[in-house]
Image (cartoon, rainbow, N blue to C red):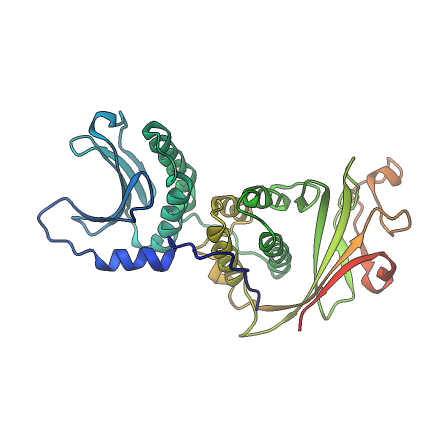
Amino acid sequence: MLTVKWREIWKVNKKYLESIWSSITYSGENEFEFLRIDAVAIPELHLGLKSNNNRCLLLELPKNNALDFRTTIKKNLTLSMHKNSAYLVLELTNNLFRELFNDLVISIYTQIYQLSDVDEYSRLFIRIFYKWSEFFENNKHNRLSAEEIIGLFGELYYLSQLIISASVQNINNVLLSWRGPYGNTHDFVLDKKHVEIKTRMISTAEIKISSEYQLEPSAGKRLELVIVLIDESFPNGDSISTVLQNIKDSIQLNKGDFSIVLDALSKNGVTTTNATDYDNYRFEVIRATTYNCDDINFPKLTRSGIPEAVVNAKYSLMVDKLAQYIISEEIYE
């Protein structure tokens, strides 16, 4: 099973939030019943229940700093300003999204808890709401093919390994390096290198290269090919949803922005609510091997190395013929 590296105990997590939700009892006397998340945060953030029993996140503002904000109704979320009490209220209107709402609360808390300027943290609260609101839309997407699931699994695996060595200071830059879902030439664009990920089942001996651009070097940066070797392992292997859960836990521990991953996943039609639809696909990572694509003898067809008249070049590479180009290898038992 893939695991995350626990750097520190970050209190504001799903378990902590759920303990607050469970301790709130609606009395029927007020529009909201709520409790402050903690005394550490400078802004006064509260978890609450509305009279209709909907979960809410409330940001208490000084009464002389109440925002001129109109109620905004999104699919499954509403944001409103209660001027009489000076509360900015984020309400979940569909309980099917409770887990994602916890993620949103953690994201807001993480990004504003150290801010003291009222205007700054209130407007950031609103910006995060708008950014996350699209993830609460239960749009229908075409189901991923088995090949697409395998490819996504390999990219998520590699992302999880990058996160393990990330720091609080660079975690979001690491997340932003995942460019494959956006149609970039290479799957990961890092400071000093580009990385192309290929995921191979143990039963196959080759990998597919989908275009003459996929192994084309990028000016000024080295290019590495990482081949993730996996085997089917049901029911004890990892699925897309379990790897994603580990990634989310590690991001939140590092105080990173999980919405960066959610946005990338959305390009593949994957959400936190439908990721479990693929739980029947479970894999064990056998090894991950990194190859030097910049070696002049590395076998590849690239745009700069083939005639101009040749387009849409697709080919396969026999993995056992690439041993001399190995840079490093991670083997899992």
